[in-house]
Length: 293
Image (cartoon, rainbow, N blue to C red; front, side, top):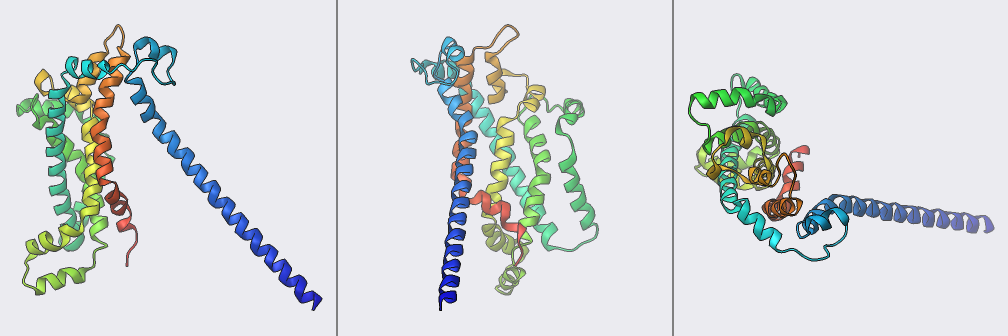
């Protein structure tokens, strides 16, 4: 009887110890995630507080709140950098390129994931090979090609390269996601009298909202923040995008950090808004094709 009591007590102690260990690991994991979140969000916090500082305050107190909140930094940056026009240019170029990327990427992903045809593996390999091309190594040949076809200093000088270089990733993600959609859904739609375009438009595409959101946010961030393509292909002031307008506050003699930070705070707001709107769909799209069944 005493042996049974001792054994039960030992089991209870072991169970309590395991629960405490699991609870400790859970708390440690949460603390690590909180620390990572703070490290990730701090640069954004620093940017926004720096946007309201004077240049003197920026250098003397780089990590503290502004002594005096300089709201005029935002208004001056908006006016001097012609950011209203630059934001319109960035919005038009980015949205157009994102739409083209989605249309071509989703259609190509649908064909490559659902149909069998000759040279299919070659087509998939070529798209995947596009992920390996160093984008900036193509600036010179692209400049020469666009100069010959008279596309330099136009919106299309940015839209077409953006779409071309984002398309391999879009196709790769679309193939992985659509491969996880049961084929029985398509067969049922075909029995109801839908053709292939009807199946795609009424069945497949509505199911692809997570991957559409994922492709959209990745493409939006790349297009909105691009500097090198815009610098090489755009010369006209009326066509300059936001990254180019930010460079106006810095020259070979110095940088006006108060205006630069104000302009950067304006430029980053649309990306944060887009991410917050689409965040629920992004993770679904990233993991949807990783598990079958």
